Amino acid sequence: MMFVQGKAKKIMLAGAITAIVIGVLVALGVFDTSTKDADIQQVRGDSKTYALIDACQAKLAEQSEYLTKEDFSKRITFDQFSIRENFTKKPADLDFLSVPSASAFRAKIGEELKRVGVNFAGHYSIVSVSVTDWGDNYWIVDRNNGKAYEFPYKATYLEFKKDSNLIIMDSKKSIEKGMETMDSALDVCAYIGPVRHYDLRPFYFTWKESGTVQLEPQKLTPPANTFWLEYFE
Image: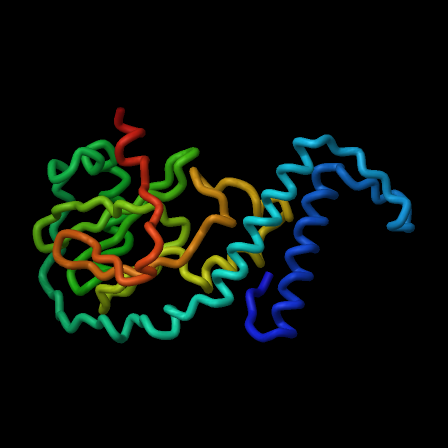
């Protein structure tokens, strides 16, 4: 599903949302599509089903409206936050004592560090480990000393570059592409790890040595990744 601008495109968008909701109804068995006459289709869902569909439609409309208006992607680019660094020395291995979660997943993080190399902000590596029911969880590792930092937010999609210290979480393009490639209409309203896809919003951060600084949007709070606390309780 594409999120587009302009009056005509907004009409197309509304139609696309309606199509998704109808798809959800069909997938749930609420509509009986055995007849070709739409006027005599029988609705056989209960009130809870309708409530879920209404909530899904409302959330999709909210997300679509937000993404249509969101213009940070035009103003915040990787080139704006470029890093000029020629990192030539051997990258340091993971210091698994730098943070408890790194110790718990040291083997997998170590494998990922070898696979991706330096891939962020001149001398850092961003790696992830996927955990059932939690999705991907990201660490930012300083390859000068191996120190690991937990990316504190719940990212379904994360974009970054070797020569920039900009991090884009759940970019507009990624959200759109994710919805286009879903196998079922139900997936739009389903959980991806601990969050629903229709709740995703783009966030922009810069990295400052040992932590993230939120650039935009200033009026929204990025969802915290509760994995860092709850998984290790």
